[in-house]
Image (cartoon, rainbow, N blue to C red):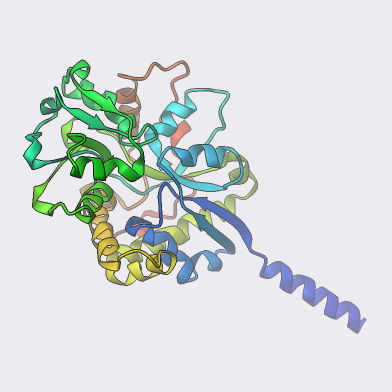
Length: 332
């Protein structure tokens, strides 16, 4: 009887402390804006939800969709607009976004002031460097349509991510597409002064889309709804802590990027917080959700340059079922 009691206690103990393993696919390298996710690990927020979270870097904001669809990753960080196009094919996995991170997308056209590109139509007659898998480049057709650019007059140069900013700094291209905070900081690392960099945020020029969001594998979500809700709660805490004190949060990032420059990554993080994480909409409505009407309009806008065969609805793209109450999502 005593032995059976010990065995039962051991079983209960092991069950109570069992952790659900979650692999999280980032969109990019371990840079400043990824700090909130590592804060959630270091402060034990994921562990407190019964989760064992590992985070892997990515090579673009589109790649995460395929990684999550494969089932090798349970959650990922990806461009929600690319998800809209992905969901147009009914044969594809029914992936949905569960937490909006970049309420204002980071999509941009970045140039040097010496190139004289102050407005969209100034790109005509210029060379635009754009990596094919770049989330910002994916919105180029919408940017062209919204600003009446004659695309035939813009030469697109397919460049790799590592050489994108160096090519602009060297004058080999006139402008580039990219996430503005990454391109801005990378140009500074290539010897360009901040005051010499020109940034056109696509959102300011008619591209009324959302940005990157956390997405989930549908099979995992169906089997582990509590784990998914726990992941969202823990991630929100990491984001709230990061916004409150980026100077502290960046230390969690630097542990995973020992060759990085702390000052550079801190500045990159602050840039993302100021323009992408935080805006009047999230301050008013709470962080992490979406305005359904705005999402529907963005799906319509994507349709201006993408031919739908099975146009998804907003409910196919984003679900708020895993979000905690609004008061727990406030930003102070």
